[in-house]
Length: 149
Image (cartoon, one colour):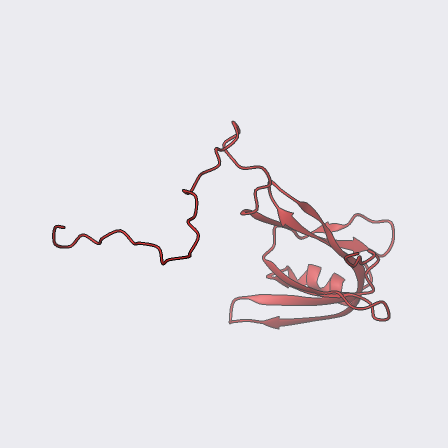
């Protein structure tokens, strides 16, 4: 064998041999069914009374949801970055917007509402001299939680 060439591996006695690797051809659209690689989130702050909701989906935001047992409401902690001070104030006062609908999933795959609740606590802060944030802690999710059967 020439120098620098690694000899093929020989299986140990008694180990099963694996079939050769195969690839699954892509559908005509060029992307596999159920793409799960472009994430998508939608955040809508809902109004107290009949006015239109505020779609904050284009804002930079982070969220964490916690599903609780039957005795404790589910919670979500949502941080929205760099809102206008007037928008922050409307949400902090809870006079115009006091609810939230959070949907998440994949752009070309599964997508749906993962949290729907009312605002219980809000606060503002800074991550650095230029970036501000608004924390929303809604709870009392109105979506039923399901457990595996």
